[in-house]
Image 1 (cartoon, helix red, strand yellow):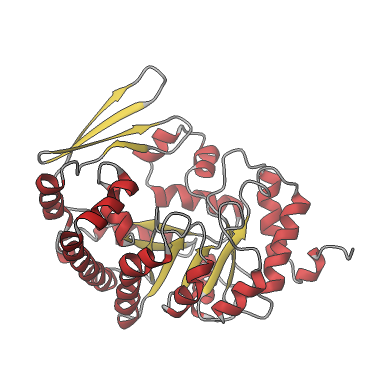
Image 2 (cartoon, one colour):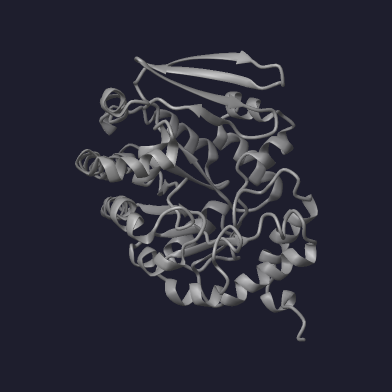
Length: 376
């Protein structure tokens, strides 16, 4: 029998596995529920890779998670309890300040970002952000990889597409970044060029300093639900191209998380050489309505990881509904080794356990015909 990690890697590389890997996106909610801890305890006290390891072991399935290198940049954080059992965390980075709220039930969110004044703050933030990758601390990454072993596929978080990077610590978020791209094209173009080169270099260093097999490029706003295809092509696609080229030159793999609508650029995503893309969301969050069309566009060039609906099906549906969606996905990708049964987003805390187990069991079934919907 193959290990969970080996099954995931087989799908990334287009090799046959003993069973179809099934990797629900257990991110924050289910690990917190399983471990019986408040969300702020999960975020502040338990390494994320460790919480995922216990969760994947519990459900006896495949999965993926991320770990990042440490930075030599010094920050200072202070936490204050709020009246509603929330924590307010204020972090300073030199003269810059950010603030987030940590909640008992929900994952934390930013309420203040470092970069408030473009001319004053961006040079300071960039100086701290662009640490030469060789100077990052890769030791905790390797320790996590060793501890996880074959339990699931632990990947190195390399970073985000450019618009996510530029807005992640920009006061005003996405709206302000769009304004910056329009109002300050030369400054943003220079920052973009620097960021693309940095992501490529960091990817190479990640494989040089660790035994990781895959790197991960996340996304927050890099989605056709929020960006036009033209904006995505100009600002975000070059980041993916650079990471893929660097990873493949080093013998590594790339997994990209692309939420929301995707169909208008799906042929381009498929042609990039990404080894895995997820989660191909169904409506209303995404626009994937025809899985056979997606399978034809991908053409076996990248692993499909998706796309059981996390609300309509996993939370609100029945075990039969879950099995039906798994069967639809398996039928659309029948005969392909590049299939991972995943979810359209992270699994919500209110998801019935029976539906999670139904997703895993339906993926493990020897034939998808066993779950095919009855003829009308």
